[in-house]
Length: 372
Ligand code: ASP
Image (cartoon, rainbow, N blue to C red; front, side):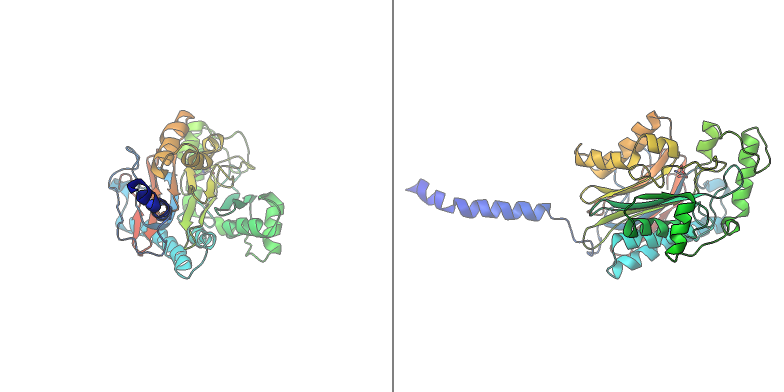
């Protein structure tokens, strides 16, 4: 009798357990104020702890030497922080207005492309023959749609061209002249090469040529830089990751590549799974650093796979890729990686990485010094 009366409650209990389990599995709504932002102080190295929670959008402005506290004046520091913050606000505005994560990362990256301080769009680095060849990509987490351009020479905002490739062509990657023509045909602003020029990048090219011991005049061609010099030249690439109200993830990356790179060289930034990856349920990630190594290590896709198939959380997965797998391949750099719940990881193995994030509550945080 007692057994039977207990059994009567069994379906109710089972239903209750199912409801509780479902609720626990549901992600927190993105529009909720963060409230619980837990910023881990200290360097990007070390224990794989998340950088922050409650994040809706993050950007990076490149890995490499970044800025050194001891030789950065207040004006320079402010300029970099302002650049990162402007991108974060541009992206957040899109999200707050109900826009998609794809539109948000595009807006954030465009802002950084227009800022001459960063190595993307205006301010892109020089190739070995003193030209500019730009790479960019974007990926949508909901359906793994992706678009990219490589080696474009006349698009003002390569990330927008990448988005158009994703949305208006059956292809994923357009390169060179065809990509430039496609962007122009689709109404994107085009520029002449001198638009990208900045004194700082020109000086870097001259320095790189001196360091590589060749000192050739621009346009003289020749072999690519040595591995060490290439690593040192990796800085200023930009990227963004975002999650929108619908919990859709997106990531985008844009770059001028590496100073003194060979004409025609394509790095990781426009390659899905290397520089950029987004998959709903796992991660949106954008990378910066020695592109060749990020390509060989399938950097951002590996972070996603470690989450999906390896049961890692985003911080552990990103840390493992940046500090173990890529360093084992001889490369340094960093990633920003955002999971669908707004947990952000931002590990880097380079001396520094410029990055920042904005929470659902609107808190904007920028990091420009190593270990900040
Ligand atoms: N990853 C970029 C490239 O190899 C460079 C960078 O991140 O600074 O083109």
